[in-house]
Length: 268
Length: 179
Figure (tube, rainbow over the protein chains, first blue to last red):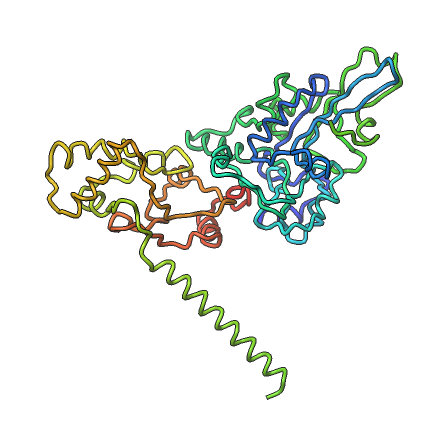
């Protein structure tokens, strides 16, 4: 696409954007209780297949967002840590250059886009994703006529053989965009909320435009607790985590949430 | 003729033949009559003769993604009177079709209209955005007002959409249509 081609010519150390908009999310780990409401909301919103037991045992479960659980410390001072993990919409995304058919690309709004009708299912992108945020459709959805009624009509039902991942609920972004345009107004901060953000009971997830200095998400991203998961890889993600505040940190072994994320996956 | 030239000739013939077949399929699809509907609803009667606006029936077109097909209830706004209380239509064909509609109303049954413009599942089209941009319904749907049975007049494939978006300086990012 034209925009993406322009993007390639740009300095890769800067986010590929030219329209004053870069969608991003802040995850405040101090607020996350690991309730999984985001996971459920995401499944309902994005027509994600149900993960039945056999699918999970084959390690082919699909969760565009998942709560990773880490144990910290030694008994009896054990602590559970939760880390919501989803596509980080990296500005230097490892998944993008490996796609032979250009099915995944970075658009001017900072979204890492997966184009289902281009995807031929090589799975290179999933192999290259350090966050395990991409999922391959191993099966065709087997839906009864009645079950089709449960589907969200604004989201494509992915077929067998293609890759899928979190889109930051791009259908909601587009809806808010044209609703505002319909009223001849500009998009405001807080207009767009992906399903996970809307469902989060503790306000852990905050979504918005990182380029807009006055947006809530941009202000939170400046918080001194901020870090990015696997920051050392240089992926330059659009998702920023705020470290958990631990008043008893000095009592247990020194732990950093970022370091914990490196220490091995332990899916909840 | 050498074997190489022979192969090229055969290859060219196959390509030409393929193009002819594709052209024929496209021509047949576009020139064929629209699908048969459960009720022979005539746009020509409603739009051309009675001058009803598209949006009088397709009410969601300015506000939503779908233009929406009117419910039986909405047809009955007029047809409760027209050939109900006031049997002024005399054309026997029209009388029969209106009777079918009224039967649907009395039996509380929706009409299973056959969809004419079918988009693949991975495409999202928003009517409101296009109407807001000032396009006429006829730009894509053709002169439906004069059609007795609705048929598709434009290919509405991706090339068609993208071509129009480029001409009108509309966004061409993949996520505009593919979500």
